Amino acid sequence: MVRTASTMLPLGTAAPDFTLPECDGGTVSLSDFADSKALLVVFMCNHCPYVKHVADGLKQLADDYMAKGVGVVAISSNDVEAHPDDSPEAMKVEKANRGYAFPYAYDADQSVAKAYAAACTPDFFVFDADHKLVYRGQMDDSRPGSDVPVTGRDLRAALDAVLAGQQPDANQKASLGCNIKWKDGAAPDYFNPQGSA
Image (cartoon, rainbow, N blue to C red; front, side, top):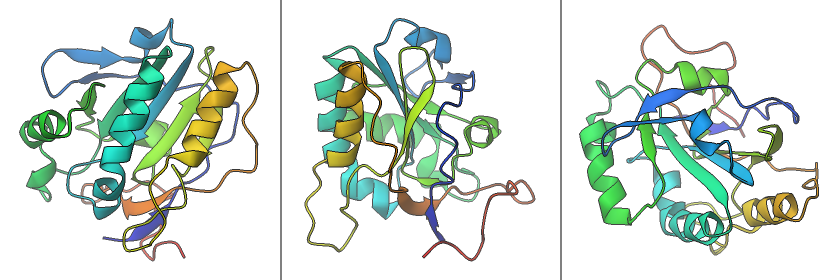
């Protein structure tokens, strides 16, 4: 794995459209969240230690904010031939074991990850009610092996601002995690195989 930071997509970017298969069956689309007060899109996977580190905190955060009218969707874009632990079948098991109430979708051709300029797992994007990007960055300062507790502080502050009709602080720290596992020859131009600091 390559330690990778968010690309920090420009604030104000419109949420790219998507329709993807959900691991429990059916599909999930951007249009499903047309009436949401805000939308949190999370690029993640099963096996990444950075995702595992925040998984319980992410579940709690999602439960808290879905109850307030925030839409939440998780997307896995990893190459499952190289990483079978991230297959849709394994995603279904992970979703059940973690108790995720949000859809967990599979981006087989990796086009949605590229549309969002997603780079790492986990990578978080918050959109307002008009589906304009208002936050992209870390969940909080906690990392695997650190003694910083997982609180979701940064992500919660951004969501609270949107729900209050305000803009989140534009000074946002990039998320950090494992790189998305691109298929051979399919890595986007923004992928840095040397990783981030």
